[in-house]
Length: 316
Image (cartoon, rainbow, N blue to C red):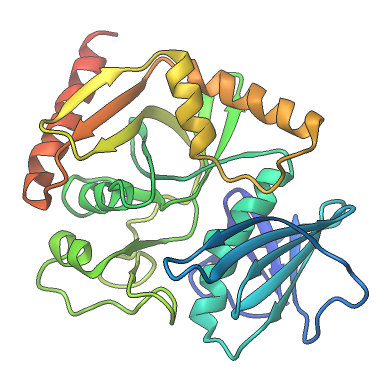
């Protein structure tokens, strides 16, 4: 058994989570390989996402306090919300990279959120002034923006498309996620030119995983929680670059759409989640960011964000 630190939690795992920092202490969750399905459980599959050909891709199921997260034809993850143990039952022979991706990038953020924490579909970079957070739909450019700031603007990577946020007395803090970026090949080539193709993040995807824990990018990952500097909610596909304030109401709806969520029916849990989102929606440096979906304008978009940050510093 090894212990790993990610998203502000300590994970005990039977197999190696190679990208993560090893640590010591009492684990928050324990990951165990389950060779056979959980016997005698009747699952209520209450949420299913489908692929373009209408085949099911991902389903959530529940039986009392037990949750099932099923990646159809790939793997089942079982978790009792009153227990630290998470079980994985592979449905096929999978590479370790695929299992690690499913657990670290998909399952763990859901489990952390169901444990009463706020986890956003967001990417973030950090420097001495704090964390820049980019939140938006899949394909909105949050990973590309984080990669471009990491590569060219003296920022460390904090997390990619999964950000554990904590509301503290002196403001919101973000915890480091997994030390890697996940980009489509075109975006990876634009942000990391003259590099050989990176390995794919999983055997079923063309997305590439850029490791920030090995050469030449070792040392470019932030390993501690960082206070928020600004949060940008992305709106690509517009005619020009624009940064604008958002009302708390619009910010709340955007945060609600872009949060990891495993539970949809427990009133007390949902009320607590809404309270967390409501507090974050009133964060004074939360903005909308619209821009054309044009890779050639990426340096101009970076410049607009940096000028906006300078204006915020001058107005203090």
